[in-house]
Image (tube, rainbow, N blue to C red; front, side):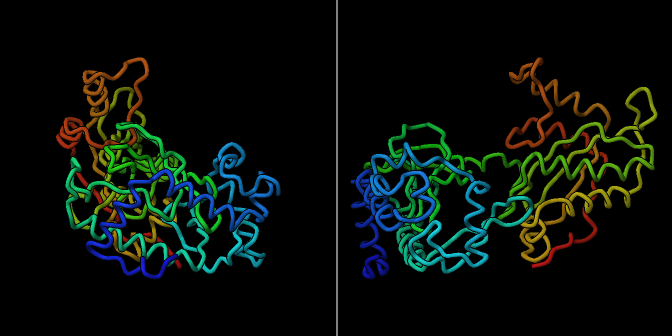
Length: 365
């Protein structure tokens, strides 16, 4: 990394952005060529490309599979446990960064080499002018968009406006064709570089800060917590959720419909506030490490809230969503409401009471 580039600010940074985006294909291919030249003899690349083709850019995509964290984790753990970095990287792994994503309830360890700090600094210097300046010729201010970082090789350079795709990266520190789980929408181009808008995390339904809760984790947590209702002849029949960021800190909101468990019809049942509060904290205790850290240590996520709704609310929600174009044959209660204002209005109009977690969930560094 050219030390001079680390000092780029203001007009110099804008000139660099113009230069990089006018030849985006060449820049990306050059980065990949450099990565392969440096790391071609690593155990991981030789496993797929052998020694003959391990530096050929043209064969990289056809020979190297796209991977998730679970597939590369064994290599990362071996390095973390003392084996040589050349399992995946020709340069020493100097630190393991904890990502905001999780695997099995624990943070993902992301390998980093010393030069990565320079690249992050360079990227930051380029981002600051973008965040504070409008570039003539673009349709929108760039504070709502992102450029593809120079420090990462994006698998899809030839993309079309409006397309959604999942970002796949290759880094100098040994993540090759790595699916990071971010779903993006291409919103335009600046020169030959795509602009994109972040849409969501793949398979994530709730997120306030660094927390990423998917539908399976949410369902598992609620399944365990709802057992607290059984001694009170109460049954959870349906639920949905959303991430409420209208106040600071934001928090998870769950809409619960509870009925009498021994009634033939959906009869209302009274449950003491303490029981519902215990349900709140029971859910939080079952959510992953990052959520509990955000709640307990970072204070960036507020107490989980259960909003109790009247019996029949979720039948009314089904009628509403079908009237908006949903298929009655394929309808499933959405486990998260993202941006449907009429659905929010319906749910909130039937709320009988609201309960919050009485304490922070357990967490240790």
